[in-house]
Image (tube, rainbow, N blue to C red; front, side):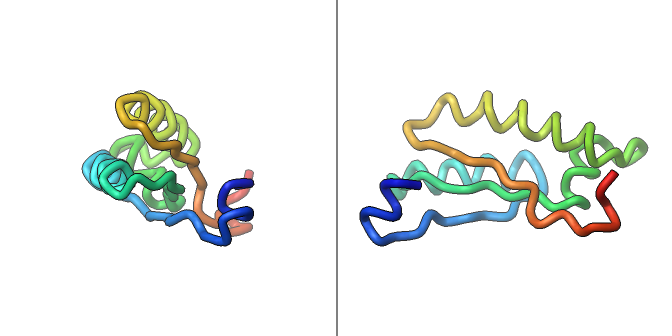
Length: 91
């Protein structure tokens, strides 16, 4: 964040809904030579846990673990963001 502030630029933030869109976003960051932010919605998090489970917490944890492993293969930094969780979804 300090680099962005000092350089007067913003990091791109991409919403992802699956492992495919996550891979595409990280690849895009790498090809652009840019660090970035990966966002997942509550619905996306539920999807990551499986269609019969639909557990946002389990899906978020699985998503974060997957993103961490994939991001290790790239030379850019990735931040994860749970995309503005609405109050009615908080536990």
